[in-house]
Amino acid sequence: PKCIWLSRHGESIYNVEQKIGGDSSLSERGLKYASKLKSLIKENVASNDEQNLSVWTSTLTRTQETAQYLPYKKLEWKALDELDAGVCDGMTYEEIEEIYPEDFKARDEDKYEYRYRGGESYRDVVIRLEPVIMELERQENVLIITHQAVLRCIYAYFMNVPKEESPWVSIPLHTLIKLEPRAYGTKVTRIKANI
Ligand code: G3H
Picture (tube, rainbow, N blue to C red):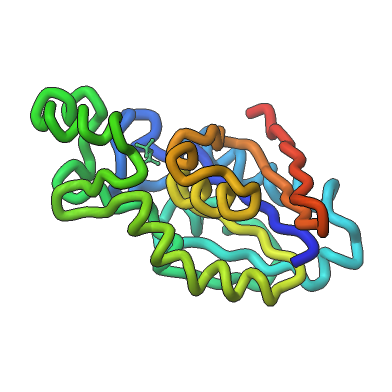
């Protein structure tokens, strides 16, 4: 691909409440990011690349709301849904630490391999992302709007981040990441929306 644009969904209600998982809508601030994303792309994409830009989202409300103002063709992937936190879905990290202290510790010790009870590990996400990556390799310009854990995996793939480090990569909200794969390595640019 020429250029891969990565973005987390805008701030969601669950982000504000510090809960993980779920399928909540965007907060007011998250909606502001969604409307700003349109101009952020326009200002930073080459005009001949804009024509063939496609937007990929997960099946969850917060990524679709983030993509709603973008005038490009869209594709929804179940494989882009957030890492499934199983029985911990909808909880805060404090609640997880209190209710499942051993799991909380195990996850901190090996975050890549730790699989939530009834849910997924980072390794599981990497495996289900394989078809997405394969299709991505065939495309010219794609904007992927998805979730923190999923973006860490995609970023790690293109940036050659070792797997143990990948679950700790910082992917902030309201920041567009531009990846340009080149023969000698991938060039990365971060564009903050300041919202
Ligand atoms: O809601 C889940 C988060 O995006 C994943 O973050 O893997 O650092 O807990 P974490």
